[in-house]
Amino acid sequence: MIPAAKPLVGDEERAAVDRVMRSGMLAQGPEVAAFETEFSALVNGRHSIAVNSGTSALHMAFLAAGIGAGDEVIVPSFSFAATANSVALAGATPVFVDIELDYFAIDPAAVEAAITPRTRAIMPVHLYGHPANLVALTAIAEKHGLLLFEDAAQAHAASVDGIPVGAWGVAGSFSFYPTKNMTSGEGGMITTADDEVARQSRLLRNQGMAVRYANEIVGFNTRMTDIHAAIGRVQLTKLAGWTAQRQANAAFLSENIDGVVTPPTAPGAVHVFHQYTVRVVDLDRDKFAEELTSRGVGNGVYYPTPIHRLPSFRLELDLPVTERAAVEVLSLPVHPDLSQNDLETIVETVNAVAKAGS
Ligand SMILES: *Cc1c(COP(=O)(O)O)cnc(C)c1O
Image 1 (cartoon, rainbow, N blue to C red):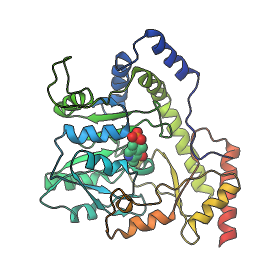
Image 2 (cartoon, rainbow, N blue to C red):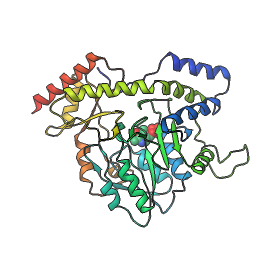
Image 3 (cartoon, rainbow, N blue to C red):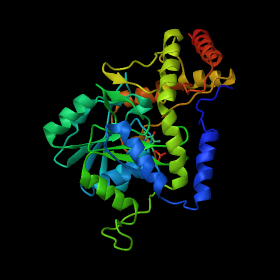
């Protein structure tokens, strides 16, 4: 079986964890500080604030920037639930809008049409590692006086016009969950150029304290441990090589796959292929997926149910492109540990299943 995703952790990560264990300092400390400094190089030197998950990063970023009750935040429904959960956890209302089919990212025209007097922010998701249309969204945010947040959980080192994701909006949020492009076990990072948002984020993750027992605000404990940061620091040194390998794998798949729609990259965009996601248009996607699995090619559907229709939100909205994507998308293995033989097997199997079904 060729696995759909494969977290790559090796001897260096083990040695880094061992170093922290031997130091006796396990909670947030020097490893977290070093991880933050090193991560900032990915986002044009912005502040980086490490937390215990990507979801916490999104949640803390909203609170730090003053998003709360009565505010509306425009988000895509075609994403992982954490995108909208974080808005709701901040006390605000997620307003779901449709996506563009080619890149599976929020549609700027739909965003503009959804703006009301209560709208405070827009949060695109750089789904599958392809950046959303940040040029158009930045212009809309500026025109209407809105804050731009970025859910960059799947898009470490992606960029548009040479500017990395996480360096566009007031705040970006990254995830280090094991299946993401790099991991710390669990973990997340907030990135921001705004000194006050950075300060508030640091307070929020640590019970509202900058100075011990002098709590300034009501806060959480969403700190990252030094154990996790030590893993993340090693992974960060490998990210560029892994990203190049993901891109090379994706290029090979796109050159050779027939019978399904392969993922394009927008002009000016750098896609980091967290997922390599095709659309199965004339065949039954679920049968296609089962057939691939039975022939040893791992795959995944991200995401079968748009967030607005999940039991947690249950909204009746008309989002036709989102609904279409939900029944057509299928992610194939693209992780950096695939061999040339694996890649050829994926191509042959996908092409055979497409041919047999048509
Ligand atoms: C993974 C993910 C998150 C949440 O990150 P966690 O680290 O799992 O909390 C948020 N948004 C998107 C789009 C994700 O893929």
